[in-house]
Length: 110
Image (cartoon, rainbow, N blue to C red; front, side):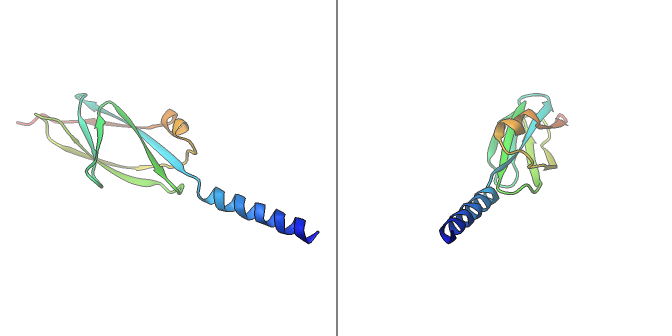
């Protein structure tokens, strides 16, 4: 009987530990006027792509993430967009389907 109890306890602990390490996702769709704007992660200066762009963030917690992006295109003033991103999704697909929409209009350089 004790053997069964120990085995059951081990299974429960394993499930709790694995559940605590689950990945959570959040997604954002960036739309700009004009289109074709380069999107850069302001945290590490990595280029995420050009607009229109949907990109996904991954984190081990459900905590919202503060995101800051640089948006630039030749002939336009650089813009900085920042927002909180909810990390409530348990799959990339679910996050992408429910992506936060961010719209930014760049001003032409004078």
